[in-house]
Length: 110
Image (spheres, rainbow, N blue to C red):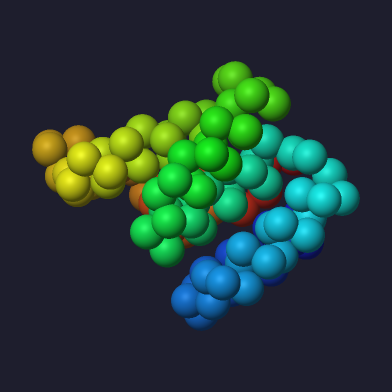
């Protein structure tokens, strides 16, 4: 799964989001992992496919209710769905080298 996450991160850098969806869906068929659902939620959110993103974050949290990347992604998504910039409101989002798109999912969560 580390290789999958690295591939997804490269695809995100090149704005190949539809390819990210395909890669993550294929990976999820092999291994039902919360962080994969969370990352897929991140990609759906970037594509403005909010219902799909919401579903993926909930699947991630159903597998692991303490998965921080899914919690962060869900919080950001809820703000986006309300038309609020998730990075505005005086809230400082700490830059993380592994969190390349701001949704909270690291490149690999083991």
